[in-house]
Image 1 (spheres, rainbow, N blue to C red):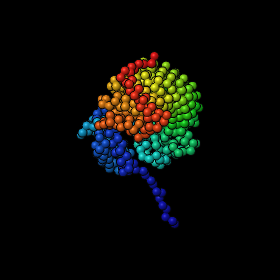
Image 2 (cartoon, rainbow, N blue to C red):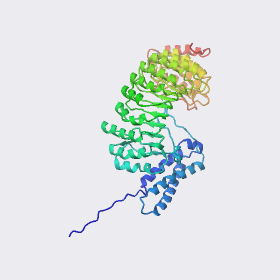
Image 3 (spheres, one colour):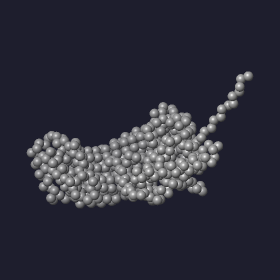
Image 4 (tube, one colour):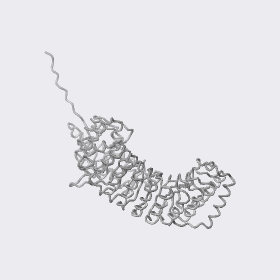
Length: 552
């Protein structure tokens, strides 16, 4: 008789974690200790080197203590050790933050030349769990590090296992940069549903990349149903090529959100139909402070639908609807809707097809946006007429303005006086961007004269404005030696070789002059050397008695 073989039993041990997992924990703690956050402002910020050293020490201590606990219950699956490991490392990290670094670290914020690239608001870890039914700032669960990759069921089960632990303290999840398949989503769904009541921030940007449309839509529905009923303040669904079908796949999640403060839908293929679906599905935006729609196919009709959302968002402080193919009608609709957002601090409408008429509508709204700090209006076809009305509105109503970018709008010297007046009206102005216009020497000299008396300016961009020797020299003399000034960009103009030498000589010993490698003296071929000299001499004569007045 053949010998019977007893069925083989399997058990899964959650402890110890792999070396790779331990390294991920160290890397995350390093970031949390060395990145400017609420906690680093409250306590202290570590240098990257010291942060890494402290993170490795914390992880090693947590691992050792957890391993000792695991040895006391060898028959267990290690879940208790995992839970203790998470709590212990967080406790030690908070103690380290409170203690502070050995050497104080200066906090420096990195900024992008145009506008912020990063759309995610950092909410850094603290070992605080939900207590007595009240949610508090907790930790970040982030699987976005490393190369973009597909994630399937088995890996999802392993990666997301910390979320399944009872008494975890995660309030923010970041699943960006990992492409979920249907089976992976089915693993994630029950886990997310179990913790949705404690979540504050959810980042699902770029989480179905490379998946067939049918599969991607099903994944979206699974996540949407799992998170339905959560009370989020931050939701990022960017970079998912959703279109109307994708928006409706998130219907359950969107319809359940009434406390959102930040919503990001960038690069999502938001067409006219998708925009209408969003307007239909979002039940309440009365607490919304940040709304970003960059790089979509919204168009005029879509902009009208988005305008309905904007009208119902009285607390909106940061609105971005750049590169969305919005024309005059949509621009007028958006401009009028923004009049309800009197708390607006940052407005970005760049790279659309507004035209003069929409520019005039926007100028009327700007008189209501008295809290504006930054406004980005480049490439809107505003021309002189629209530009002058907008800048005059800023001059009369927005004294706290810090940044104005209005490049590529066919602005000529006729509009230069309103910019000159801006320096007197907005004493906090730090950056003025006027690149790719047609100010020429006459406009540049008007602006240069006004800049001389402005004390807070840090950056002035008049690149690609057909400026020649006289204008370049006037601008150089206006900013050289100015305290706190950081960058003059006059690249891409038509400055003669002699003019370039003069400008470089003016800035000798200074590092605030930008590159001049794209300067092309032949940009104005109709001006021969003699004519250029004569025009410059006439313009230079104006410098001594130029009066700068605001346009009426």
